[in-house]
Length: 368
Image (cartoon, rainbow, N blue to C red; front, side, top):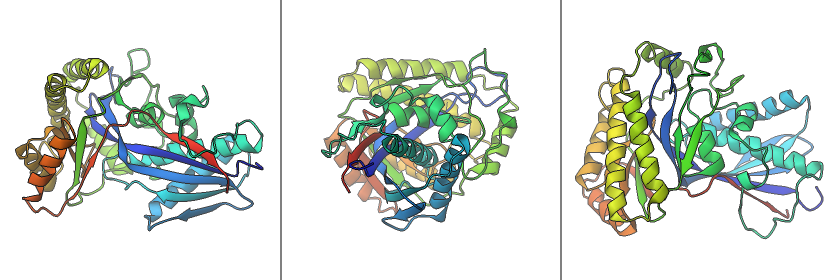
């Protein structure tokens, strides 16, 4: 550890466009479509330590501290060790906002701890101290979604965030295939820290969204968080009915992936892509329509979606349970124009323009 005492890991966040199936024993169960964004982002520093310490550069919800501690405990339990680490959260993602913060946090901590231990045993080249960020997925073949399922204890349902953490881009998670659809996910314990004993098999593919496209995010008034046991109970209730539209959703998702694979970012690609996304999200919302009182999770989100459409944004929806609402613009100029029009509505929203993430999590080692 002489020269590699400090490591940094950073990642973006993810949008989730909806699940395709919830019913046990069904193909595509928990499959879905999502997109990684470059901002807002999470960044954590790691170092070896004689005593475990978790510090924060700004005020952070106590739940973040609890979730970090859970991943630390999980690692020591899996490895049969009692090692200590020093962590500093330089930037944090807000939990329960629809941005997949729990998965990005757990994955970042799991990867950072692994890199520190590799430094301890001289298995990691510390020559990356120039300040240049490098992709985590290029560092080792060991870093897979299956590795994250084990050490981050995520991926019980959707694997979009795990795949996005490693590779970025537009992710099509195909959920349970027919050969593994009999796995009983309800027997897996998933507590409020996000730690579970096992994840599901991961079947996914990734495409790159054009870098000139922009995404506008807004956070309306907070809706009641949907997580832990409450979410599991609702998923089980909704899973009593098979989604007859799941194969239509898969076809729409595959068509969107194909456009992203070949797109140069032109208007000729943007319109059909966002149209496919709109149709996909319509079917996804219908699964939850009765439980959330409409196509969106509450009147504040419903109003935000309508406003985004009025100002010309495309592919508009809520991410996961919300409250984050998003909309696509063809380029930076169109995004700025929509932002100016949004300001006319004078809503008390937190609004930002961001870009699709072309890569997954990154790391660097620096001298302390």
